[in-house]
Image 1 (cartoon, rainbow, N blue to C red):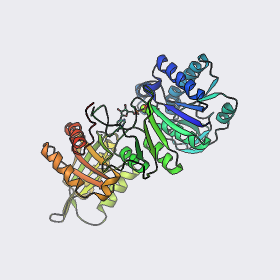
Image 2 (cartoon, rainbow, N blue to C red):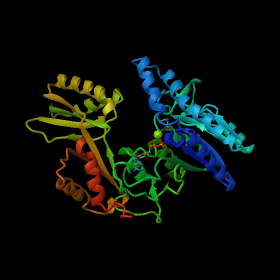
Image 3 (cartoon, protein in one colour):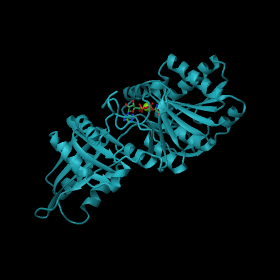
Image 4 (cartoon, rainbow, N blue to C red):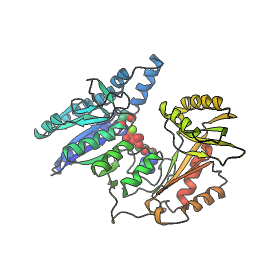
Length: 406
Ligand code: ADP
Ligand code: ASP
Ligand code: MG
């Protein structure tokens, strides 16, 4: 008999039919002899809807009230799923994040877990009941309701599995982690397993599933994850520590990301301390910089380009304009029409020529590369946003990732 934490994403609990299907699955799991803890997200697109409404009543809604509002989505879902379980004859109790023992810092809309004290969850399990916990939420050290941020329910599930000593299953609307987004490339292949390191690299490049924080938590605490479908219930993808049994593919996946923008400052003085001032200024405004390119100096001046989340573009632009004016740089160019294509694979470490193939393949398709960055197991290129899906498709095929025709 094992303990299984089963987390269901928004689409998996989007309506009453889906909730009844989830309840049926819990019945099947318990019949097998396992104990179940459920973690649920808000129904369908409810989080987006709540965020939109907040934006309509206030220009800059207060963090405390935002968290109270957003977490209501998950709270509603826990009660409805519990009712569906009762209806199947399964005793169940809904719990808010606070009731489930999630203590966080006071950082609203992005709260970090400080401690999990799942006493009430454990007690419910001991009484043969199914705890249904609201995802992505807790209570701060100042006793306010907090929200972990988008995708935070995955983190709730991993943290509970760790605290209770159970297996963690993340149910979603695709049947696992794919070689690339199956909605963009229909011939994407489901991976049977992938290492934490490769998964984290894919998350960092923009793969939305599972949420990056959850994967980081799972790697630190060695909690294996099973990403699988809440629609077909077939076995999905295992994310675990690298071992000999894993597919040692040269390339595991291709990730497209259209959420970044680019800023270029031209003709900056090429003297020590300039980059330090620019990126210190950006850090002070909370701007999350990804790629950075500085050109070779020509006549004592240089250009610097960097990428940042589109949402951070206004702050990034302000900081850059300020520094450019102070230093007499030529101009600041803000560009929100870029996309980033990334190739991830542990096998790259030992295979020369991967980068060359990436560049040749993009060139053969007439796709221009604007910036390049690499890690030991990743190559990323910035291209025009309009070329992004094509770039992903081309590289997916070039590296032999397309599924064989059925
Ligand atoms: P949930 O709400 O269930 O937690 P998300 O909607 O956040 O899940 O993420 C699931 C979506 O992620 C899928 O519908 C799929 O389109 C998208 N996705 C993008 N890249 C991948 C990938 N490489 N593997 C699996 N899903 C991916
Ligand atoms: N409902 C929230 C979101 O969509 C939190 C979550 O489900 O992970 O981001
Ligand atoms: Mg989601």
